Image 1 (cartoon, rainbow, N blue to C red):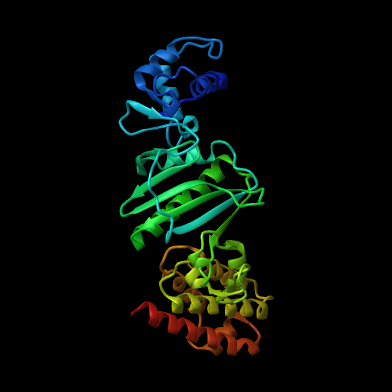
Image 2: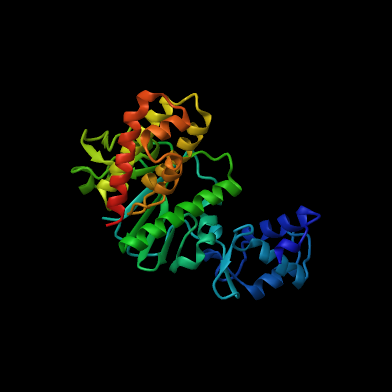
Length: 353
């Protein structure tokens, strides 16, 4: 196991890996970034100008394990005999059919996409690679009844670099796959590219944008700012049309999401009213985080999770006046609290149907 191996001399490992990914005579599959286990053993045993160290079969197995998924994320295998290095694959995907129209789309915007980001994503999600449709910076994935295409995306006159994720399929599977891809991308950033800045954007679905090839893309931060203000719509900067935030994020119930956004607004009002009460502010902050998560998650549904945090906030008092007295908030916040409680009760009725 890699966890039980201590590498005292990093050159021992780095020289081997660099030699493998830069080897021009990798074998007849080199243009596809593919090597076999037998070729790997022979190559590791030999020496050359770029690889001055010879490695035994046992050492070679250790290095191969280092290169695999959840270690250095350099290569993957489906049969333990043939291995694929996405970083060495051709620039473009093989011929394929993937109609993006009507798909669930997210852009990840970077000032620059570091080498190895997409290839690591491919390795991490290699079990879903669809019919060997993989390239250096692109891949087609299939999971359940959903397919996803991930590749580079360019905006005219925009120096930023983008990764475009498009997922199509059944409602449940496409949202599940989209969120898994996003989660893996964020984990790779956390582990390998800590200082890498990025933002997420989603295409507008206003009456005009939804039918054109180049819609306006809303930054997720702009949507989040609108939610924090208690707004349920956002303006399309290209057309001037107002768009439902719930619809934009793919939620199945406008009522549920709009109700949560109203709760966010009231919680923020309460936080201002009770700024001198540290305990209350901490409780409200926790509730806001818990509520914002399901609102901002592109999941096609609305979770019941926020209720658990809100219930805890109000469990100290059955009646509004008791609750206000216990938490020592200003008495003029009673009306706001009462309104919030009515929203919570209404929301409970909605989710219980």
